[in-house]
Image (cartoon, rainbow, N blue to C red):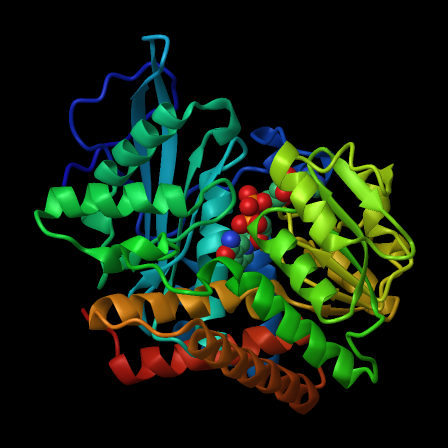
Length: 456
Ligand code: NAD
C-alpha cells in the first residue's frame, strides 16, 4: 500500500492509492472553529477533546495503571485518502475521505461511513473511539473504527455517489475486510451505498465477500431488522430508563431531533407502543403537536416529500426550540454538538436519550446533571445498530440467516443486559450514566489488552 502525505486541495491528480497513516495519535488538533462550517453549536469544540475528557472521568473512577490507559487515548491508525470523481458535467472533483481504526483489542474494527460536508479527521477519530467503547458495552467482539467523506451527498447525482463510493472503497481496500475493519451506514449513507461497498470490495478481491460491510440490503446478505435496529434499541433503552425513574413509555411525551434512519425509526416505534411523540425534526425544521403527532401520517408525508417542512397537521418550529420543549424524553438523533453550554440550562426533558453520536458536549453534560436531567449516553443508547450489524456479520460468515423475530429478541436481550451493566456501574461508583458507561467499556477493553499483552 502506498503511504504518502496528502495536502488538502481540490485538484490533485491521483494515480495510486494515497494514504496518510499516523499511528501515534499525536496529529495536531485544531479548534473546530478553524475548519467547520456547521451550525454554531458545532463550531464550539473538537469532539475528540470530549472523548479524552470523558475517558479521563472514567479513569478518575477506575484509577487504572496510566500506562495501560495511555493507548486508549490514541487511534491505532488514521488514514486520509483523496477521492477523484468524474462529475456528470465532465469535470473532475477531488474529495477527501477518512478511515480511522481506533482499537482492536476485542476484535476487528467496526464503524460506519459518514458522508457529510463537515466531516473531518477529528470528527472521525471521535466517532471511531465511541465505536470502540460502544462495542465493549454491548459486549460484541469488535473494536472501534469509523470512516467518512467530506461531501454533501444530497448535491450528488446517483451516478456521482456511486463513483465516489467505489473510489473511496478502492482507496481504503487494504484497510477493511471481515477480519480487519467492517464498515456500515451512518449519516448520509444507506443500504444502497453499502451494496456498492460490498460489490467494489468483492470485485477487487475476486470473490463475493458479504461480511466486509453491514447494513446491506437483505438481498445481498443484509440482516432482517438492521434498518430499524438503532431505533429499536433506543426504544428498549428509553423503556428501561423510564422504568428506573418510575415512568412508562405509554403516554410519555417525546421530542425527537433528526428524522433519518435513527430518528424516524425511533419516533415510529415509540409512537407504536403508546408514547406521545410531540415533536420531530430534520434540517428543514421541526414539527410540533402538543397532543402528539400521528407518526404514520408524518412518515408518509416525509416519504413523499423528503422533508418535514409543510406537513399540514403540526406547527413548524425551529430545531433549537424543539430541544427546549416541555417533554419527558428528549431524543437527539441528528448530529453531534447539538446540546451545548448555551442551551443545556433550558432543556426541560426529564431524560435525554442520545440517539446521535456525541449530541451533548462535555460542558453541557455538567449543566444537565446540575438541573437533574438524566442523560443516557450515545455509547449505550444507540448501540442497537452495531448489535444487529454484529448479527449480520455472524449470519454472513455462517451463510445462514435468522428470522426477524430472532434478531429483535436477541437485540432486546443485548440492550437490556448492557443497560443493566451500566446502571449497576452507575450505582456502584456513584457516577452519572455516561461515566458509568465509560467505566464498563474501559474495564472490558483493558482486560482484553491485559490478557493479550503488548506485542513488541
Ligand atoms: P441520517 O443521515 O439518516 O439522518 C440524519 C437526520 O438528521 C436527517 O433527518 C437530517 O435532516 C437531520 N439533521 C441534520 N442536521 C440537523 C440539524 N442541525 N438539526 C436537525 N436535524 C438535522 O443519519 P442517521 O443514520 O439517522 O444518524 C443520525 C445520528 O445517529 C448520527 O449521529 C449517527 O452517527 C448516529 N447513529 C447512527 C446509527 C445508524 O445505524 N444509522 C447508529 C448509531 C448512531
